[in-house]
Structures are given as C-alpha cells and as structure tokens.
Length: 422
Image (cartoon, rainbow, N blue to C red; front, side, top):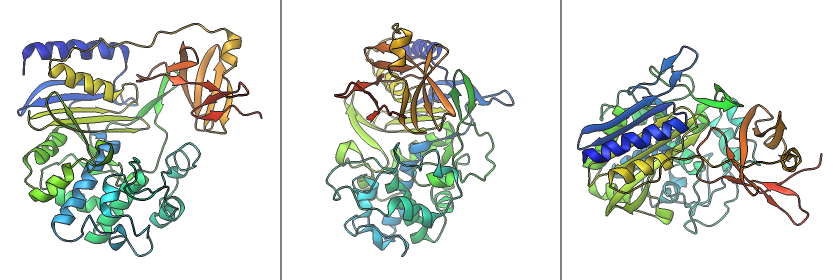
C-alpha cells in the first residue's frame, strides 16, 4: 500500500470525525496487514466504556450474506435446489406463490410485499412485541405479491426472513445453530453470533441514537424479528476471516461460489452487491437500523478489505467507505463538509410544521428549532434549512437533504405525505 495514500486517508478520517460523531471502528486490511484502524466513541455510555478494535457490533443487513451463504451450503449438499420453488423447502403452514424460487428470494426479485414502510405498524411498534414465527408470516408475508418474480428488483427483508426459515426447515436446526456449526465454528469466527434478543454477548457495543442533542438508547425492537435479514453480531477480526472465506473459495463448490457472486438485477448477487471500479471487482453490502450503521467492501483481486462498524447513526457509512476506497486507489476526494445552513423566519419555519402521518411523521418547531419527530413524539431529530424547501439533519451525515414539496393546493408534502388538518 502506498504510504502517501495512508497519510491521505488518516487526514480525511480526522477531518470527517471532526464533523461527525462516530461510535465505532474503521479497519482497512490489505494482503493480511492492517494498514489503517480507528476506534472511536463508546461501547457503553452508561459505564463510560469506549469502543475498541475487538468490540462487537450489530451488523444489520451486512448479515444477509451469511444467510445467502448458508442457503448455498444446503444447495451444495443437495438438500435444496435454489432454482426450485421456495415452497418445497418452507414449512407446510408458510406457503407463498409457487412461482417464487429460492433464487428469487436470494436476489430480491420475488415480488413479495415489502412491509418495512411508514404506513405499516411493524417497524417501531409490532417489532417490539413477543415473537411468533407463524403470526409474523401470516400478518406480514402471506400477502398478494406486488409483481411477478424476476420482473424487477425490490430490496426487501421479507425475502431473507423466509430464507432463514428455509434453513431451519431443511436442516432441522435453528438458524443460529446452523450458522454456528456450519460457518462460524469452521472459520473460527469465535466472536460472531446471532442475537436473539436474549443472549449475553461479551464486548457488545450498545446502540444509541440522538434525541434532540443528547444520546439515548436506540428504541427497543425484538431481535427475533430481524433473523435472516439482520441480527448477526460480529467484530472486525471475525469479519476479516469471513472475507478470507469468500476470497479463497474453500467452503463451497466452484459452481456454488459462482452463483453466489453472480450479478442479478440492480447489481445484486446473493447478499452482496457487485460493482466494477478502479479496474477491478468490488463486492459490498451495508446495514442500517436504529443505532446501527455498517458497511463492508471486498476487493478480492487486490486482497483489500474495508470494514466500518458503528453503534450510532451519525456517520454515512457509504459516503465514508467509498471515500476510503477512492483514496486507497489514488482517486482525489473532496474534503468532508456539512450542508451550509440558511436563515428562515419564524413564519417560514411554521409553514412546514404539523403532522404528515399520524404518530410517525411530524415536524415541530420547538424553541426556534425544527425537529423531524418519530415514534409518537418520542424521538426528535433536529433538521435545519439548507436550500429552498430543503433540510438536513443537524447531527447526521446525509448524502442528500430532505426535500419538502408542495401539492397543487400549496400544502407541504414530506416523504410523499401531505400535511394533515387535525
């Protein structure tokens, strides 16, 4: 690795962290050597425990590649065929359209309904309740598909929840047990586990969000609802072992590895995204949830692995991760910067205030400051004006500001919802 690139990277990360409050770890490994590492913030604010390089973090959707890999193990062992209907491998009481194959689930091309949206009461409400697999399926997955399989790509956690249940049904093991026995233990990933919400996980970093300008614990959710699509907890050391598994192609047949890495619609493989940059292949995936921002990039031909794990939401892991890979490939990047704030009068600020979706999307003006309010008024995200009808989060790095539009009646619309008259 060119030493000047590392100096540039060090400078960039310092500038970035001067702007944004990272709780987490950044690690870059090339040819088996850690060429850059930075830990920052707190694993546990309550006991003033800092994050360190061995801290374990919730991975959110970075977990999907493990679910996909487990399916490919079963495919290799002739216990399932990914090109056959998923119904062959789901429990008898959990049947979906017979046109949907396991491949469609793996590639997010099933057409199944995506219930992770503002209108639905799942996120932030029912995902806090006691978990029942049967109820979860019946209420949120047993719905009419929105389109035919293979018609289009629709990133959807439903697909990976169902894949986890396929793993359990076919293997006669829990998802946790199958992954532990067949992936984590063989790879000596001793710091990786599936969080079922009950386990005591040593060196675990707790998740935090900002309410107004102070940290609070991330809103509770029952982790059992994340299994398959998220829920894995790991650290940099173990994720590098996972990177080596994918790089060296030793656990699956060549045919299975080729299917795993083959690009489908929207550049999505199985639990990974593919792009061709810097004259080489890049495989990556990120994760986002309340108090979680994660991103992992793998350049196998260059033997380069970039890992970002965070237990707060202030950074934009994609912007930061892609800036890191740009720098390491000699691409000039702009210095980190915040959106420039503009001035609005009190009356102009009031124009945007009110309820857009009851208990879910509200803008409030409190002591001269605007807040995007969520979870029935229990979480207040400060926003500030940065352009005409544009607003940015105060403490969070965004790629693009929020845009508030106006309908034909000159009523403001936020996230596609019109300001309501109550």
